Structures are given as structure tokens and as C-alpha cells.
Amino acid sequence: MTILETAKKIINEGPICDNCMGRQFAKLSTGLTNVERGQAVKLSLAMEGDLLLKESGDDSILKELAPSSAFARKSLGIKTDDEKCWVCLGLYDNLDTWADRAIEAVGDIEYSTFLVGTKISGLLAENEEILWSECGITHAEQFKTELNREVGKLIAARTGKEVEFERPDVLFTLDIANDKVDLQIRSLYIQGRYRKLIRGIPQTRWPCKGCGGRGCEKCDFTGKQYPESVDEIIRVEVVRTCKSEDTTFHGAGREDIDALMLGSGRPFVVEAVEPAIRSIDVDELEKKINAFAGGKVEVEGLKIVEKDVIETLKSSQADKVYKLKVTFNEPVSREKLISSINNLVGAEISQRTPQRVSHRRADLVRKRRVHDMQLLEFTDEYAIIQVHCDGGLYVKELTSSDEGRTQPSLTGELGVQAKVTELDVINVDI
Image: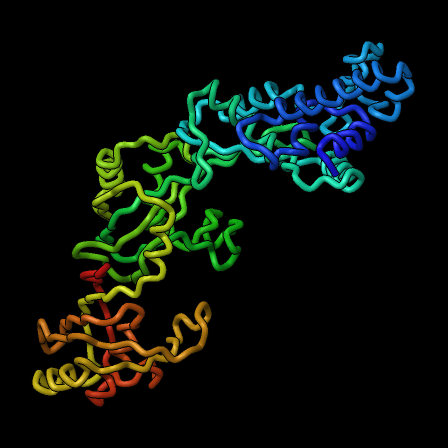
């Protein structure tokens, strides 16, 4: 079937605009807009009709050619009222309106790149399917693809912003059925390291166990198990600086609530959700966070990164260095303790999920290795031990044996029950 034969079938389905006509042949040529294609096809039909009319002198020939084409009938001198395109329902006449709505929706939000998407209505989708089915269309461009492109051109021209297909700062969704524009703002990702300098605060927010975060007497109606966290301390200044809706915290592992995080700090990424400001001074933000934290938490090395960094943080099994304060149920000698520690250096540890975290982790036996272990201080009351090990090894249970769930262990080697009373994370090696 030739292009003109296909075009005749399209015309016979009802009045159609230049955009929708040209869109049916969008994959057959380059360098033209769909409007230009549509005008060219309609002009060819009109010229063919005029030729047939001159050759035959019979006006009835037009009924076979294009009985419902407003363009063709006007071109041939047939009087007709203005008609709306039955495919797009006149939507292409209102592209300026959709561009204006998108720009109004984004308001004062800072962005450099954007992308337009369309949520097409059921009626428009049905019209397009009918046309393709009835006319055997095989080289068309989807309605929403052209709409995205054309509205995107208008937004770019009016704002000076650039279209970005992979990671746009803002995504405009044209909701045709509900006659509105939805806005999705890409998060801003800030990477750094934190040190936790006091005990008793968790890394992230914990909802109250009693009410699940709804608020009750037990949590003084805060909905929180603990009054504050590293996450929340960092959050305050990030929200203020970025004017974001909230933050999400992503850490490279976590330390226990009663542990300090010292040394070079633990890598993290804080995600500013729906930020209104993207061009921030990270050095100034770092100062503000540390001032607000009041010595509880320190951050350093802040920088803007892409989302991919989060996956790297979460998937990495970084080596850790811990400093443990250990006490014993019975007196032990320095020599026996050093011998027991040396037995664990280089050992592969079989560790069944500790009882204290079994409610949130699968009950598995994991293999981890102790790289180094040193006695730093020894007294009659306690010992200070430094452990360098694989990430994911629970060093409290490496010490206590967790009733035999961790093998080998310091308790097992000593033959005396040992317990960690204080834990400091000295280094996270990423």
C-alpha cells in the first residue's frame, strides 16, 4: 500500500490535524516535523483530487478521495465548518497551555535539566489504536512521544533549561485525563563520613516499638524509640540548606547504639528528597551540621554524588577496625589472654545470626575472617582489645560466643565467659 493510499484511508476515518497525519508516517523520513509531514501528505491528496476533478469534471470523485478531510475539501473549494481532529481531540492546539502549566508547577524550584512524560487518557489511546487497526498503520510514532517532544521544546525555549533523558532534575508528567501536570524532583545526593562521638544514639530513625511510630504515652507521643539519631542530626541542616521535603540516610553498615564511631568515620550518603535548591556550598553545609550537632556527631568530606554511589556503599563488605573494652566472669592471666587472642588471628569465623538481631536478619551461618587482633591494655578489671576483621562480623559475639553460635570465639579459647562492655569503631575501610 502506498503512502497516499494509506493517507486516503486515514482521511476517511474523520477530520485529522497535521500533527496526527504526519505522525502516522514519522518513521519513513528524517529532517521533517510531523506537522510538515502532515501538510505534505494532505497537499499531495489535494493535488491528486484537483487533478482528478479537472480530468473528469465529476465532483463525486471527491467522495472517494477524501469525503471527510476538511483540508482537502477546503483546498478544492468545498465549503465546510472548522472541525476538530478526532484522533488528538484538538490537544495539539493547546501545547502552549501545557508548557505554561509545567513552568507554573515548578515555580521557584532550582533545576538545570528536565524531561517531559505523558500519562495519556483512555480515549486518546483508544483513538490511536482504532486508527492503526483500521488503516494498517505500521510506521507511526506514538502520540505521547510527540507530545513529550513538542511540549519539551516549548519549555526549553521559555526557560533556557535543557532536556535530559537519563537523570533529569525535574520530570514533568502531563496527566491528560485529569488535566494537570505532576512534578517529580530528583533527589540530591550528598556523600561524606561521620563520626559518632557519644553513645546511646542510633544511626537512623527508630519508630517506637509500642506504637510503630504513631505516637503513644511510652514514647511521649513522638513516635520514636530514641529521641535523636545520626540521621536526624544531619537532616536538620540539609533540609534547611536544600529546602527539601525530607532526607533519607544511607550508611556503609552501621554501629550499635552503644558504640562510638571514631577514626576516619563511617561513609554515608544523605539523600535530600525533593530539594528546591541544588547548587549548595558543601563546605558551608558541613560547618552548619557540625555546629548544630554540638559535639555529638561530626561530618567531613561532603560532596555531591550520583545515586549510584548508594549501591556501592550498601554492597561493599568493607573491613572494620574495632576497639573493645572486655570484662571476664573470672580472673584471667595476661599470658592466657594473649595466647587466646593470637589463636583468633587469621581464623575463619563461623557465625550464626546473633540472637540479638535474629528478629530482623535471616537465621544463617556466615563466614567471616579475623585479620588481626591485639591486646592494647590489660588490668584486673578489664582488657582493651583491637580487632581488624571482615565487614559483617559481629565482634560482640566474637567475644562472647553467643552461647556457642559463634565459633571460634574469645570465650571459647579462654574457657572463661568474656563480654564487650564498650565498643568503638575505629575505621571503616572503603
